[in-house]
Image 1: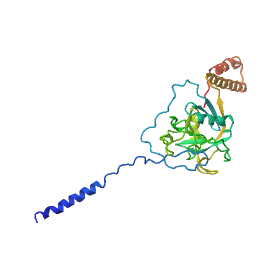
Image 2: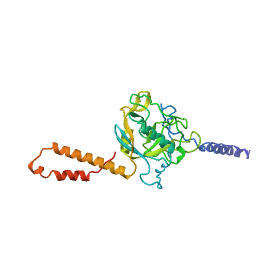
Image 3: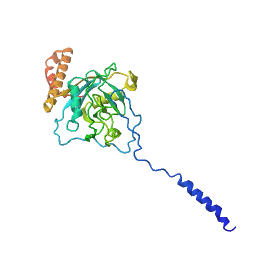
Length: 292
């Protein structure tokens, strides 16, 4: 009976110890992070609703310091909400840049729309007309997402379906860092989306587009701008510093002409008539272009 007194307490302690061990959290399974929400090229099929939770800040934008300034081609995208200037990286994504410029030179993007806008993700366009007719394209291109460029805010990348090499004409502009779209491996799930350029002027226009009201419209059940955002045209910009000077001169001339027109409409007095020419020249000389 003396030994029997210790049996129950020992049994109780053993049971308590087992119950505490069962509350220990299980080890997280690597690779269990939800898949990122991905742009698609034609009809938003295959769109995944979840995005990975970023535990660390995304790496900053990469710049190619070995390439002289002005060596990269640029295009200007005129939209119904303003102009966007995009610098392209043919040294990093030669196939994608050649493909994009092919559509630019064919004036393919003129009159297309931004048909998919997600405020804290990206803006996507270049494939549909305002009445939601899908434009015919050339053959799909090879995915160059393994070129080292990241889907960071301001970058432009090729939209595609779930098939790796399915990109044609549609593109998207990242309005925030989207590391979930980057190349993380050679398997289809992690290959990523190819970045081929970056907005260098007019990111405020992209931000205006990202903030438009969206919903169901046309064939799309969600994320479509309720007000039409049109791509009026996309054109190459002349290369080098001469292009910048030419654009500045054009803007300065337009500013001077506007000032002259306003001056002609203003009521004249004897005192102002003799002094009006000098201020007008000063305006023309000091005006600086504000590319948007």
